[in-house]
Length: 314
Ligand code: ADP
Ligand code: MG
Image (cartoon, rainbow, N blue to C red; front, side):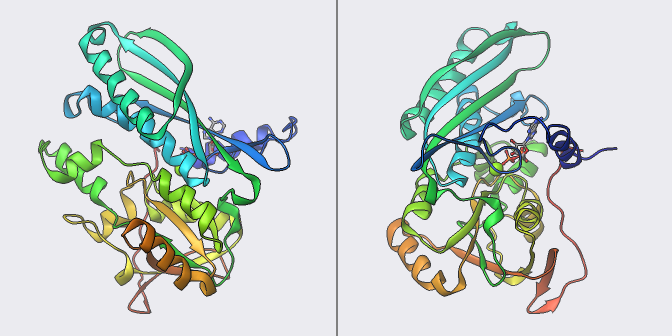
């Protein structure tokens, strides 16, 4: 069967000869639409489908409203942009019309208000079965500050913005019927790293490639490597693991929505210090960019023969 990313590659190839109209398209967290020499709009779309992305009995409507927007704002943050607007389309089963969908909208509204993001349109339809959400989010960015997946260079240090795997551990709890654990709450309430993304783009010269972690470092880092034409070494003992999670969840389970970046090694010290002074939390170096392709996993410097794979839909 074709993989999710195989299909996306095929779509990209199919459209190769259709004009791009100065837009930078398929392949990054957001598309980039230049406004002028100074500024661009970045734009992303993420869909959440019941029973694929969430179980309705395992989340509140309010949490789901917030999470739906959060995963989109995370992609805007990953470009180093300031989100300013969203469009929301919902296919709503009849039994959810009323208090449930109003609670969903309150969750969506509160996260919109927190980040100053206007809701400027969308679509509302009935659904014969599941609840489906499709969101477009837009941000604004100075051209020189845009963070792409394709800018990693050999010698860069790879870093993440927080311990990973909490969301994956939480999903595990939810699937085991334990809905009230701390990590289950983390899974249902991701925080898009909007302030961090903007700060990195504007205050941390030397951060080169960036993306958000939606499918796990083991999957997402490979996108940076492929886009940049480089390889990576990851030191397993350096990977920060969230409380209650395993190393495998930290690398493979996804939905942490933290930022993954590569940093000019000469700027690492300065950037770590600036970031820590501002956010009162660490940046975590986990490896480095090398010549070649793919990821080499190291355990205390010795090649680890096992493999780690992130989440894919097929
Ligand atoms: P992310 O996890 O950051 O949201 P995805 O892995 O969903 O990114 O998508 C990777 C890239 O492929 C993005 O640039 C996205 O816009 C693009 N993409 C995904 N599905 C499609 C599609 N059906 N048609 C066109 N582009 C797509
Ligand atoms: Mg992304």
